[in-house]
Length: 334
Image (cartoon, rainbow, N blue to C red; front, top):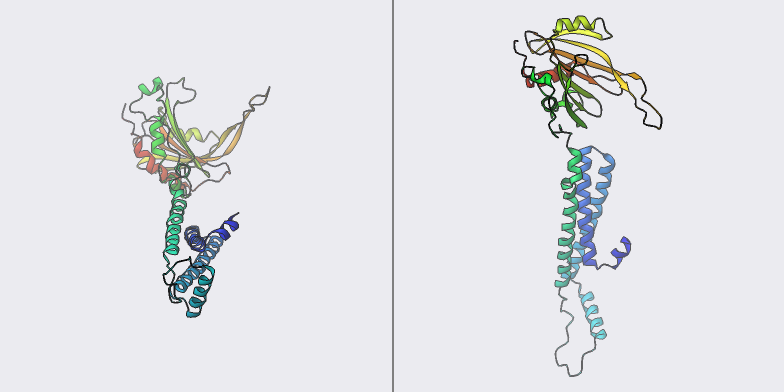
């Protein structure tokens, strides 16, 4: 169909059309090839540009031929025109002589109109990817959903200056979080926060948390407002299954690094089925930091894991803590 249209179109419409299309697609493909370092795309773009250069050369030769016709061509053309077009009876005007050139306004008008029309089409094709709503949406990372503000549990009212899950999510979901994890090319796929209470406390201990997930890693941050100090926390971990325990100081606060497995729960939604038992999930690395410099009780846990089981360096957790902790008010004296 395209080949038939190109054969039917006049020369002064077809050639400018090919030039515009070839130049637009050639430049665009070359731009993408340079940006993505794609040799195949560079080869395709080069073909388009070479094809466009050939069409420009053909048009330039045609324009020169129309402006400066050869004497033989003029004489033969004039003789053919005179023989093919009989003079009406009674006509007294002189016949066009062999040296009278044809006007080029029709050819130039067709060329200008074709270039303007298909230039507009080419510009639309060029700019469309930058203004398409779907592209804009896919390029944006996940944001913390405001939604309807849930009612805070009573434990938050009895805790001095507690951070909420929404506030934690905004602190954690930083533009440079993927870079801190060592995967700067990724964008957050999900981001959420919740106002929980600590387990086995009958809802008396506030424990807000936030989670941001990427294709490679998932980061979870929680703040537990209990009376347990970091020293007590370390002693408790030694009785558990935590691995690679390492004490340190972060922003002047006592902290501890340790590893443990996440929990994996599978739910069978089939007819008559029930949820399976809780299984051991992938290994996670956690940095626990006291909520204040004097370690009066309470801690902030920063946990990272991946479905593949790979973990970033401990330095990634330390960098995340240095960015997140200033957004959590220190616990005051009680």
